[in-house]
Length: 160
Image (tube, rainbow, N blue to C red; front, side, top):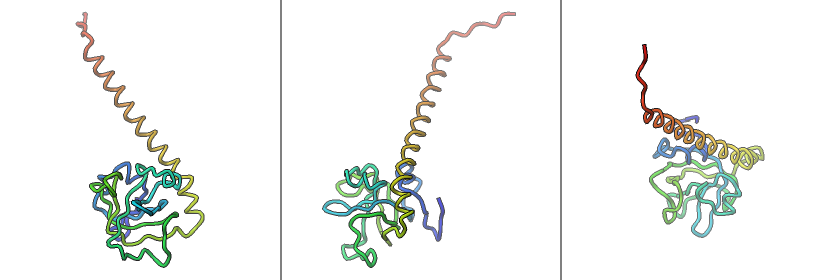
């Protein structure tokens, strides 16, 4: 996470993994943007957008319908977006994990390298994040079991 002029440059993975840490902060993220009927979201991957998996996405809310998002109209594609992240808002009909509102900019990603990163590296990062989360929770569960087992065993008096 890098901050420039109070804007936090981060990833969709981090926003989805720890939404409260970014709530009401100005963020800059890259992802696959898809807009259409009842949809305006930045997705972790192109595949997530194509399948409509909003759990891997963040709703993008523009200030008003006349908002210009740059010289080119973007309906689908890899983009960079800057706006205020809201973990307490959930986009269209409340179905999205979070929302970016007060969007200041939304521009196509300019290089093929950035698109490759979003296509191949971001999904791997998400899998690693999920795996680490499972590992941590499983470790905590096992530790609780060990502690409860040791607490329930009768203690033997020390012999001299």
